[in-house]
Structure formats: C-alpha cells, structure tokens
Length: 159
Image (tube, rainbow, N blue to C red; front, side, top):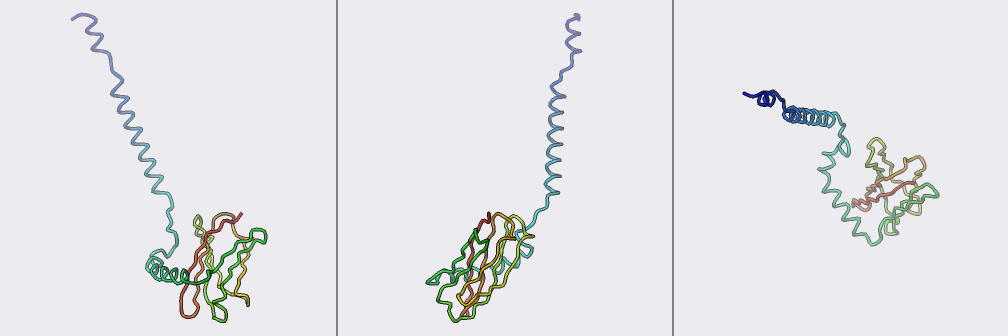
C-alpha cells in the first residue's frame, strides 16, 4: 500500500458525530418542552364546569325567553360615571324580579363575582365599576319574573 492510501483510511469523518449531536439536542429540546407543558397550570373556565355544562339547556331556554321579549333589557356602560346600568323594559312593571348579575373575567377566574339583582322603582340597577380591573368583562344577567327564567349576556371593556 502506498502512503496516500494509509492517510485516507486514518481520516475521521465528523458527519456521524454531528448527526448524533443534532438528535441528542433535539431530544433534550423535546424533553424540556414536555416538562414545561406538564408544569403549566391549566384551569377550567370555572371550578364547577361540569355542573354548569349539565345546566346549559336551561340557560338556552332562558336565552330564548329573553330574545322573545318585545323590549330588551339594556346593559349600559357609562365610563365617565364608572358604573354599569341595567335597565328593564316597562313590561316588567309591577312584577317581582329576582336574579343575579355575574361579572365574569375570562382571563382571571379569581376576579369573578356575583351581585344580587335589586331593581329600583324605575326598574333600574346601577353597579359601580371603579374598583374593577381594567379590561374585558362578561356581564351575565340571570333573572326570574312572572314564572319565567331569562338570561342576557354582554361583553364590556373597562378602560
């Protein structure tokens, strides 16, 4: 054998080591991503999600009843006065109206709260929004009047 043939046989290729190194780095990256995903806290939209899912048909019926009203219930946001006004139509005059107003924060379940529905003589209720966190809120109004259940929802953005 000649000297050039011996030199070529002793030369080591780096390609197999680079390919193995790339696979090892890829495996470490995937392992890191799986570990990060497993440590992320995933909350349901609400703590009693499954119970609310069962009652969803009742909510649909309440929405249908609210849509059939000749005049709708107005949820008016007044930024300057830092309040939210609920205005019921005249068709509820003289009826006992009972219910709740749920302020639902999609981005933070710990900020959700509920206020009882207490209409004044003008069939209105004013709720202060000054202490609420700025951003998106979903106002869910559930009430009962005249033996029927009603449901209205409106998204508001506090600035």
